[in-house]
Length: 73
Image 1 (cartoon, rainbow, N blue to C red):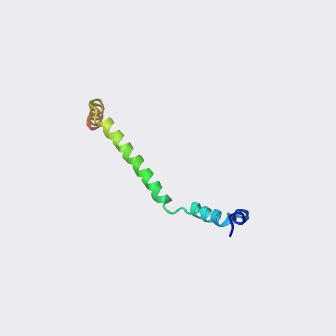
Image 2 (cartoon, rainbow, N blue to C red; image 1 turned 30 degrees about the vertical axis):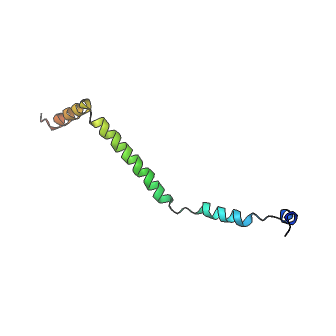
């Protein structure tokens, strides 16, 4: 086949397009990715709480809250 004839041959993009759309339509692994995002968010929130609760001021507030709750009368 000559170069000119190869350049004039019509190109059918439908099979490649359909294959690409088929791969994009698959959602295998989507649930796993959602679990990863939720887990990372939970770990980040837990880390933030640990930093906040480690402070002396917050510890004092929580201690006073528990003492007041346990005080009778």
